[in-house]
Length: 372
Image (cartoon, rainbow, N blue to C red; front, side):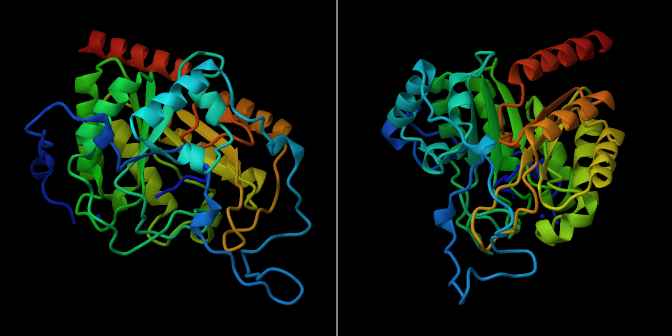
């Protein structure tokens, strides 16, 4: 888990995307029927990808993959086992609601902080929509892939909203795999989920961590105007490393265009992006990426350590120190980012200062209302 995010289409007219989600004939949905969607923190489950056969003398190696014996994982990447009263409450409610959590299955390092609410008391979760099978194959991500994944569950928006309203969290991140097989890339499904969630719980803050929708700006419009509070899309890495790190259908300029359009499409929209460190990027390349993101007025940036899920994935080139992450936080905020969450275990759907973000959302809403 952005980033190690489990990232992630000719589009019909925008009006054709306004498909009301169907409600069941009986509006009371039994909790036992709320399965079929996932909540995730962005840790990676290595069991999803088979390990390569070992060659004589060590693991199979490619030009960008395999374990590097000269790069050892440092102690600062180890976390204490999650505990706490709020954590136990969330854990029990997840079990009661039959929600399948990758947070638990993949042993996400941030699970305790997210579910306990950290120092600000804001409990958060990340829900993965549109299934668990991606149409792309990024080289940092362990999510399974297919050209033709199963179709989305039409009841997922309603069931997800019902479950989260019952759960009682304050801040939700909705994310998904890439769905290049869908005409709108899943934008309409995202939008239906946001609308349903706001209907059940108007005060909840919703962040959508999206794919690039193949650069389709009409799909971006649909989601931006659905009622979400934060639009997030990850550039993942610096410009030079894009073709090595990401699927060939993704791209640096395409990601920037999506983030720029989200900001322009709706006045006051808060935008967010994420970059993984430790893939071989230079300081100058990172500064260039920061500058490019600020040039399109991205508000929030998250920076985290890339962790290799299996030897088949990209090799870690460097374990960046906590001190260097602190430097990048200070640098990012000095050039205009409203907030930078920077640390070895920070992920793109990490709780990135949600109390701060909630305050920012309310300030922007008030400013927009005054101007209107």
